[in-house]
Length: 370
Ligand SMILES: *Cc1c(COP(=O)(O)O)cnc(C)c1O
Image (cartoon, rainbow, N blue to C red; front, side, top):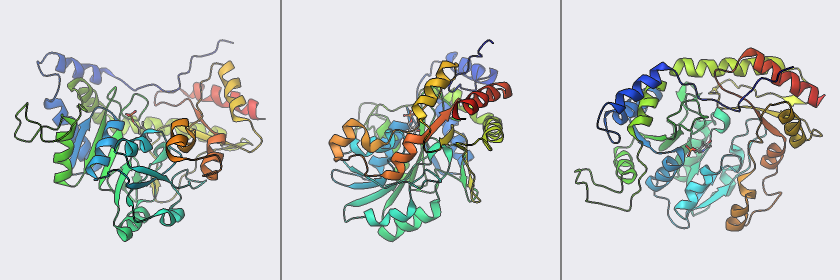
């Protein structure tokens, strides 16, 4: 039998995206132009935020959000060890200290019952991550932050379009960050955006992404140590087109996720992602959990032999070599996150994935775990 080629992920690009990019190419403005403004406005309107500031990546956005929240050397920021490394790196960029809190085995997000015992006199912020597009219970996080006078920075880089209590993930905290790498729900090639309600935060973000330039616009006048974190016009054009199709983009991913769940729901040895009443997941990846006793890495090898890519999302951040060195962590520090890391498996996932491709993956996986 011929093995169909199944990518791990694939951006959903149509004629509208191509037309919008061509539009930009016919103008002399390839950075800091009208597409940036249009993209920022559309994202702000869609998520319901007052300000949106486009940046060159989700990581850049997280870095600027940490700066805007005033994190400095020695400040502690509470976050999760079960995430992509960027959500902890952004704290280290400003010489803050990521203070990890273990996760909830069901949601794979921060275990909210464990946060308060990690708060010290040095704690300045909580940085929750909406892992795999499943939003955290933000009302509880905001209540903890308020009790202890902490800033909240949401890493919503995997959660564009997710909702908690009907409100968009990323808009609860002081600052929220979305990412637009090609495997995300919405892509700009590379890119990210920071949302906030605070005009001072917005002004600072705009300045810092553009080499610390002042508002007055004098090109060679720099008010602070800034960066080149600008989002170019071509990327913004891609983003504007994607936002125009956002309902469709998210619905297609939801359909693929539902197909997976239908087929894997009753397979022994596989635990599928479950919803919860107040939570609307925006599907970033489709991650199953394998039962104890199933060797996840062996499963990946056998899938790969049949032309099916998969990923071990996520290796725990605190056990990455440089993090062990910087923070002195070791195996056993966050047992729930470590157990999740050993048993989670991301399957191929993208909006245009065909039913037969889902079938093929599920048949192969079912046979392997049996
Ligand atoms: C993708 C991602 C980021 C960073 O996004 P980039 O655009 O790749 O820099 C940050 N945090 C999480 C949790 C992510 O998944």
